[in-house]
Length: 291
Image (cartoon, rainbow, N blue to C red; front, side):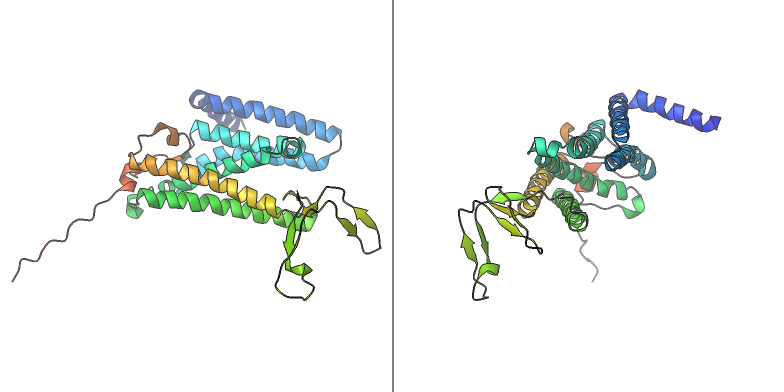
């Protein structure tokens, strides 16, 4: 027991010495989440208590990945990840900032695209640490991998949101009020010709028991489609932005300081630096001079 406490103490002291800014942010955010959790327990809001517990676990994931994968997360990247988790779970879900600040969700999805592209960019370096499996990849290829990885994460997240909405009606894919729609479902002939309705001011919902409810939203209620497209589009912007930065980072043989703040690197690796990953020359084939 004493040895475990000693190890934890030494680990904390090492983190405070080498990553003081990250450790300070981690302590402050963790303390804030614990206070929020106590308030939610007092209010008997156990769904939010679960979100607080999930947030505390997610806070530990970056350091766990560092140990398990033997990688080093840049301080800037780690701080942004911690703030991202706090903003998404505590401020967004419990504090309802997604409703109070309509563009908050858009900012988080853009940042998610940027960060996932940075992580995708570093995957080849992390997985390619041994000489026996060394690759030599062009800057364009690395940028494409980073972009595709980020977009894949964004799509999977939208799948998750849609699943939660269908199973538990959580409305994670926020609805949008629109004044014009076009649908083939309204074609009286049953054909494939969309019928367009303009200047929609209200929609009346009729339930199976005959209950009629006027939504009173000033238009037709779109069920999450536009929100999903917006989220994927801003994820696209974030992913494309970092992919371009990463491309020129490799072209400059790793001299750019900005990109380094967001790219995890392998520790104690036999891998060459990023410039060696970017370029390789295939030796010219010798001519056969034998007769």
